[in-house]
Figure 1 (cartoon, rainbow, N blue to C red):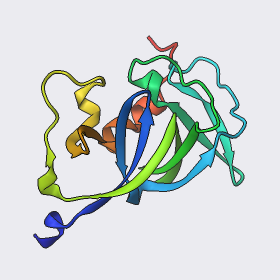
Figure 2: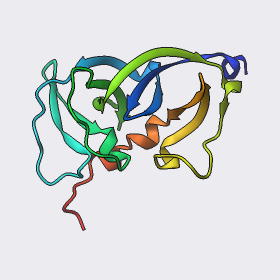
Figure 3: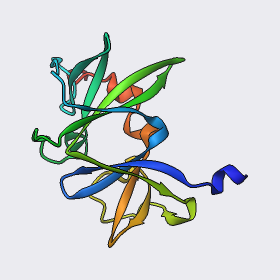
Figure 4: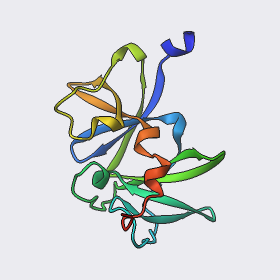
Amino acid sequence: MADSLEKKQYLTFCLGEELFALESSLVLEVLEVPAITRIPRVPEFLVGVINLRGNAATVVDLRRKFGMASTRHTRDTCVIVVEREFEGECLAVGLLADSVREVLEIAPNDVVGPPEMGLSVDAAYVSGVARHGDGFLMLLDASRLLSIEELAARADRG
């Protein structure tokens, strides 16, 4: 029971003016945007794959996934590499973000459930909301955000 009361570390990042966070234990690394190889006939938010030390890692444009305009590449744009387990195998997935901010410790009692209305993204992807300065920080649920079924989906299915 003590584990559930311990603070967790979150990597915070921006998409437009919004601040988001993922549990830092899921993050393998943060990269400058490498060359991305496009893949035909996949959902719009799957921008392609990158070479990650000899392995292909799928790259998700989080802005597109959340219904925002596509990510504009600037010097701050980065790829947050996270690990997902699929059928016993660990797969790396890259998340395109406008910029990475900082790692924060957040206590469970500082997190509330996502509101029913008013979120700029689908509430299904948000595990909670934490106060941050004068605003709020959306904590993303990686298992819903990066479902293997969705990442493997083809845009031409139907």
